[in-house]
Length: 451
Image: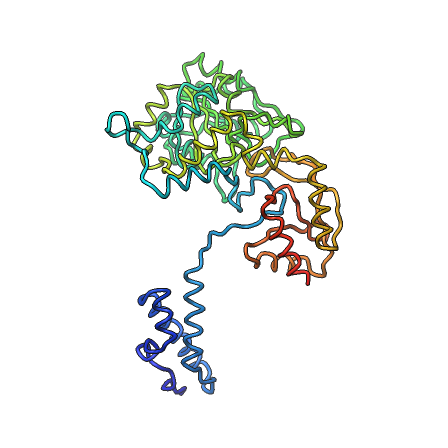
């Protein structure tokens, strides 16, 4: 049997100077938990190895300190995105503008007029902070903001289609990241799914035939992360809206990306805008705040005032409502569009609009500072379920290293982590998604790992 008598007790370790320092830094309760865990691990090792090495009190406290540091370390940390994916879902999608960050901090650090009417001194509504901005920018009668676009669609369907039929094309039954599927949202809302068409083609006649099932609405869903090519067809939103309204049905568009600007101006394919969906006759349009809109995570619903009012009064509306931090930063983001400065102030649009000349110059500056690497042509992508298959030309810094994946791992271990990618057995870094203030840190990390 292994002798555990050499292991000190928790109380004994708590009398050490090391423990006192840890208690000051982390608190007594957490320190005690760490010491107990380290002692339990030491006992287990001793029992597994009868002639195990005797561990000192100093080493036990050192292990406790390491454990406490790991417990207290945040897991949501900033990173440098050198992948060239502008709306990288795993990296938090759209970074906020300086104005949006300032608005968020102001709302976080002080009391605010979230639901308070300064004029009357009575309770107000949190929805007013973005209503007028969204109405002015999109031309909608009214708007409502919830915590993400899946919530927006869930609220729309729960309010108007519970135990009723909703017609949707099979070409639009999409699954996005994390296994999220449009049919699952329909099911959770209580709506009944009426599928029409084939996986690659659907005609207006298919929607007409589905009227026999007494739907309450037509739902059009953004393709999100795939593109249909080849022998494909879908009726336009104008055609669907006309047919829906002819039979007193709602026309709902899950527009998704939140585009308010014409992406074709930047050398990309045309992404349908929120304004276009409303102009086509849609009664309600849902979209994300943190995709092409370039703001915080939010689900935004715009459309007919009577329909928005009914959703505001639905019990789910409170459960899905946006918080003050979201509303503050979203309002600041929308102000950029109102002032005609979105391309200059919103990071997503700044990245999209970067020129080939400017990108190449930045990579050459990286190459010169490092004294190695090749400047090669490449492509950036929008990502985030927006503009699938569309790319933007860029320049890349390509590094020849012995083990590219090991190199990427070491870059991820830097502070802050640097995220790059491997292409043709070379580590490549795209300047499009690297903010100017991050250049010096990026170069420092590369030097550290290279040398």
